[in-house]
Length: 107
Image 1 (cartoon, one colour):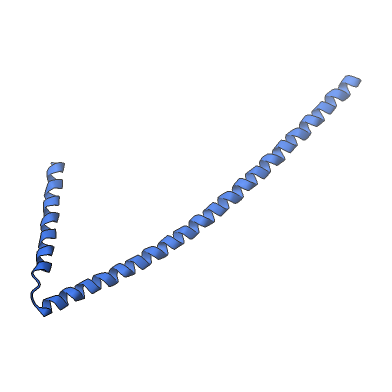
Image 2 (tube, helix red, strand yellow):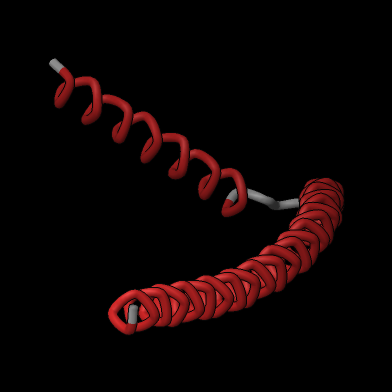
């Protein structure tokens, strides 16, 4: 039944497309042409406005992405610094332990 509903929808869409094509093909007078042109210009303006909004949204998303990448890089650098500090502390602890072991063995 899902396939039947899908096929029915496709038939309706195709029929609507044919009707729209027939409407454009049947323009016979200047008045009809003016109305069609007015409609097309309205659609053009609407799509240009939508394009502008999408472009603005894209630029904001790119800026946001850039900010997140910068923050991620800063966090990675911080982690590298912390790891280096941690390794240094481990080295100091091992040296102190070795000194204690050596000092104890001399006694």
